[in-house]
Structures are given as C-alpha cells and as structure tokens.
Image (cartoon, rainbow, N blue to C red):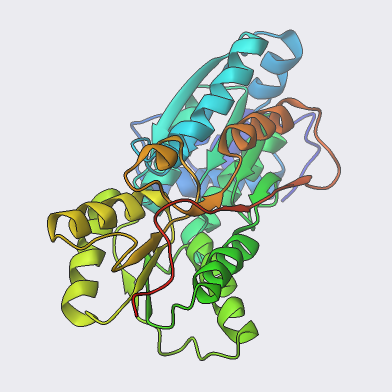
Length: 343
C-alpha cells in the first residue's frame, strides 16, 4: 500500500480509509468530532501508506511554532512542579509558550493530552513521569508520538524507558539502594515500604534498588511489608495508617517519593509518634520543602529542575539517528528524620 510520500495527499488517505477529507484531517490532527475507532483506522491507513502531514516540520522550519507541551502526572506533586520550573525556564529563554497538561497517572488521559497537544500543533512535547510496566498501556502513546516526530515534531521524555525518543533518566535503582542501605546501616531491621502503584516502572526500579540493598546486607526482602497507595500525600497518609494498624512493630518507613513521606510524617505527628526517636522516615526526590519540614526529611536528591531543562533542550535540538539518553544522578541526603532504632 505504501507509495511515494512526496506525492501522497490527504485525499489519498481519505479515499483509502473510506472517509471524507474533513474526517481524515480531524483524525490525523486529533481534533474532536470523530469516533476513536474511525480515527484509529485513518491513522493506521496513513501509517501503512507512509503519509505524514508536515504541518509541524513546516512550522518549525519557518520559526512559527512558538509553543511546546509538557505532560505531567500530578501538577500538584512538588516533583513535577520542579520539573515544570526547568521546562519553563528554558521556554522563557527561547521565547516559547509552555502548555502544561495533567494526566493523574492515567494512561488513557495521557494519550488524550498528547493528542490534544498534537492537534494544537505545538513544536515539541516533553512527557514527564513514570512509564507503565505493561507495554500495552503505552503502545498507543508511543505510536502517536512516533507519528508526530515523523511529521516534524520534537519529543523528549523524563523517566520513561520505552518510548523510543530522547530521554532524561533518573537513577531510580541507585537511589533506592542508597536510601535503603542508609536505614539498614542505622540498624533498622523492621522496615516498611510505602509505594505507589507497581504498574509504574519508576516504582519497580526504586523497589529493585531497595531489594539490592537488602541482598547486599544478607537479608531477605520478601518479608518486608510493601504498602501500595496513591503516589501522593493523601496516599502517604493512607499507607501510614495501614502500616501502623498491620505492622506496629516497624521502626522505619521508607516512602518511595517525598509526597508520600510528607503524608506519613503528618500521620505520625497526629498519633504522637516521635520521629526519629520512635520511627524513622525517609523519602525520595528531595523536593524543595523537604529540608524545611520538622524534622527535616532524609531523602534521595534528584536534580528535578535540571531534568526539566535538559529534556526541553533535547527536544529542541535537531533530531538524532538514535534516541539520546541523559542520566540524572541520585544522591542520598541525610537529615533529621532518620536515626538508629529505639533500643
């Protein structure tokens, strides 16, 4: 079915798909007014024919595309707020408008947001936040982003492994190992983990690092309570309540992001449980507020603002033959919320 791309017209795609030119246009641009089944059939026909609508390439070449899109999981999460700061900083420097979209860690909503940005003809898209363990949950997003790139759009991601585009990747495994080693070195053997959904690759990587620390200490990680909740402050509160109810013997709680750790600290404070004298708490990310908490939070520092800057800078560069990778370091920051367990 594939023909010479230079001679293909939108009308050819419409005819092959059995739809009107208007329907074909809306399907390929992600505009509303077309059912998802019809839109997907038109996109598939376009892919098979080798047709690309070069609106992005033309606008970038002409310097007329002055907007970029940023897709994040939770804009209220300080992790994503700091990444957005980095993206906005580069955008301001380059004279670009940044559109920010929020997905709530929902793969379908993420796909909708990506398609909306494509329909708005932004010049570049940055997707920040964990990918999904199940490849099927991000297959459609990967396909749409590849089609967008083929049409001249630019893409970079943060913390995503498998989308086949430029990426900034934090060392989640190394960070998980470092913070768990810190708690083990303090003498904690009755530890609980508060985590977000294990459908997220970020969670899998951070847990892998924790498991490596236990293995390195000659300890069995399989018996450690791992409490799953929303990867938010509210989720941290819920996890803390479950841990206190089901595992009252724990002397340390490791939260796999700072937002959850903040929720855990609030529950312990409300219960009159002293940190770190009775229970140590550690987090992951080192959001700005972490050092100002009482007690200040032991955590893993990721250079989130810098990650946002690097991602947009990668997206704005000329495309490379192979996806480029930038690894962001993860450094343990020891503060007041961790101490040896009570005797």
